[in-house]
View 1 (cartoon, one colour):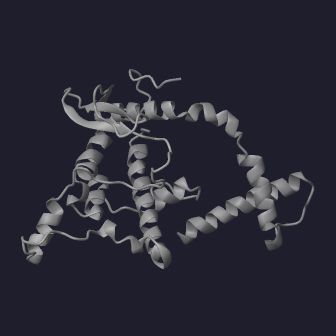
View 2: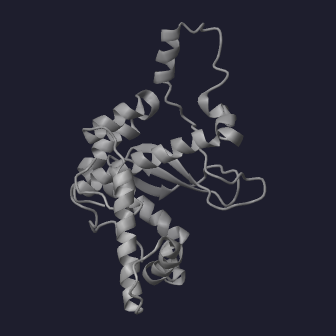
View 3: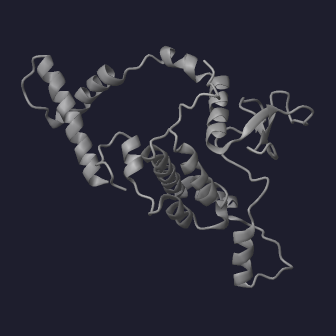
Length: 64
Length: 191
């Protein structure tokens, strides 16, 4: 039942996104305005579509 | 937010209507049916047997999964740390190393409730990122003789009593940012 470290269940691009996330959000921490950190990580302003989707609301694909 | 909310109501009503038809009730869903029928749909669609989920959600499994994700995404490795002093026998410590095998941090795992331990979700920073504060204070012309006496987390009243709704908004916004960040992984075909 343990996750097997050698198998890659995660998508192959996870590490690329993770590196961006680490650089712009995790490492930056509170040294930059979070809105700026999010924008640099995502390439756009943070939006509510993802949260709505996770909470079960139908949101058109591609809306921010 | 309004449009997704309305769209969700339409989905719910469609589910209710379908169930009503299946039960032989032909009439359209009326406002006074809504809660009753919504509960029936919830039971039919989402009444998961928690006993089936529990084996997958054991604490050690979740900790392993967390370590696994950190290894996959950031190249961190975790080895049990020997001889590190802990505040309670329940506390376990791992040494975290980066992909080059260099020491990054110690991870303290202290998941159990006990007398004298505060419950709830909060965090303390042991190693502060102070550049922003330093620059802001310099810009304000803060006399170097005076130390910071209050930082934002110390204003407990923002999160307590009547002002809590303002605090809650920040939780919701934090949730929004988290979901948006997770969306970046999904869009890249991961997670």
